[in-house]
Image (cartoon, rainbow, N blue to C red):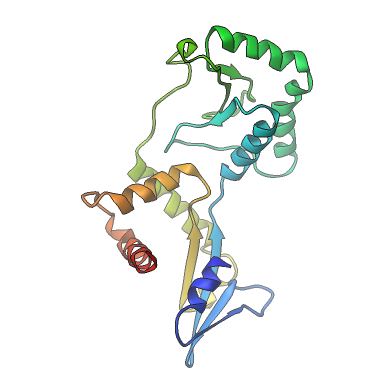
Length: 220
């Protein structure tokens, strides 16, 4: 809807949902010309992480979920694997004694690491305490990957995911409108690109970022 609204505001452009069963999401008409638009949310594991975080927020606001930024981060995201993954995460909290014991541990030192499935890497669930004097540095890993390499990998991966979908190769000219901002990693990367003038933008993305900057400036 945001993409459709963006094009709708351009004088002379008529925007409509693509009428065929298989094809891009939108068709923008300008005079006698068509532009085909495919919309894509690059969600990866971030939606699952956000869901887990929302559940813990309702259970106990001192329980946090996290991962190391700009590093490989992969959670099950569909089917039986996702069901089993979520069941293994939340099942211990059906026992009231479990969380009470962890809260007592957090009174001595925190964060207290909470169980996650062994096969999952770079994903942490932990309990915070309430006394700042009891905070113990070094329990949670603090490293991060390279944001430039991460951005390049995510852009390439999103393009591969959509390269052969919805007959894009048969509909020209076309635009792929990607929402990269579901995960905090890419929110940080894009904010860095937009706010630090001396930061070098890779040439492959220059037109995308230039367009983003101009539209942002126009709306501010």
